[in-house]
Length: 227
Image 1: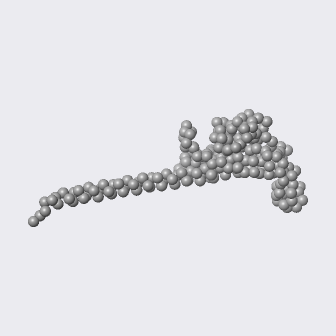
Image 2: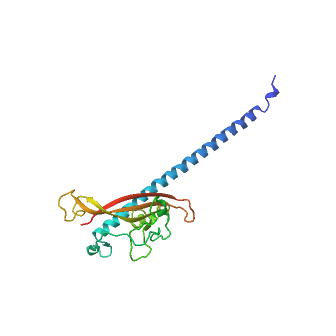
Image 3: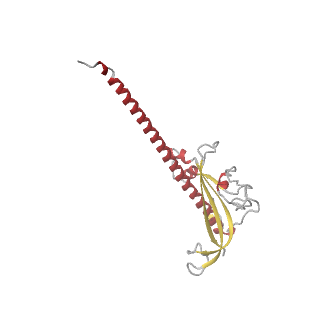
């Protein structure tokens, strides 16, 4: 004889299994979404680190360019008569950058900087040029490294690199090579030099109106021969 108490059991079991599978599917979606967000954050932090390294390289290149004589891109020659070891500004650093003159972000990301910090004037023709700011995507595009139509272009345009430089003072220089050791006698011999500290930042900011930014700051010391 058929047991009437089992009527509808299959339907109830199906609903319970459907609910359990729905909960499991939702949990998997949340886990995958969080994992994807974490991966994106890691990618942004890593890219910001690379951009900060670019800032240091550009700052060091500026110092070498000044020491050897500013390069004239139009003539393709170096003005050796203008070679110099740059000095600090007389004014206190206000955190302004060129061309992004509102860039206090990089300056404020370094802790324990003196309030009377003085930096090198990177462009004497521009009164507020106490540092340099560049869009990383534009830099790669202008260099011909990436295609403007590339999908990565929009992402890389969210990154900026900035740097400013201070002159630390006299230091012992050791180096090899004729370009670094003009007139020295013997590779690796000690000479008088001038030390500089380069401050560089890699900044990710997808929305200029948002305070949600990723900033990586790095420092390096460069010693140039003074004679």
